[in-house]
Length: 120
Image (cartoon, rainbow, N blue to C red; front, side, top):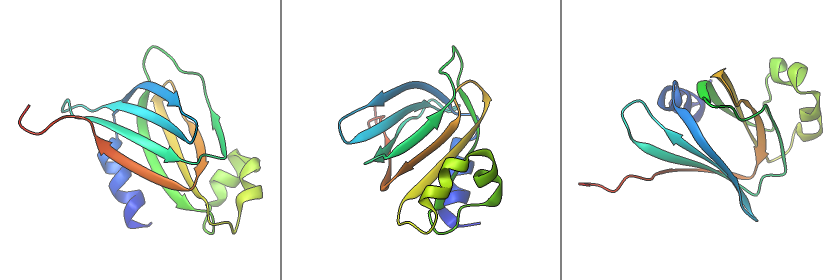
């Protein structure tokens, strides 16, 4: 398991997605964490995504990221569309939900920003 995958899964387990926004060059997930710290996960230059429906509650159970050169077999079986991105330089994020929104996103760069101001 790579370090980015370990850190993102631990950081976002049980986080609630309260907004999803598509911009011209990005796809953004807005998260509210159990400790009230807000984060925005930005997928820069997304080229493909397959997401389930956005519900009243959208709680992340597992959030993992993978390099296009190392897509796990279970993802290829669940999302055969990912075969098109094998051996590519793209990144893939997979999030399984406890409830609500889940799926995969294929993109170039992942950015995670804390939306709370320090000392606020």
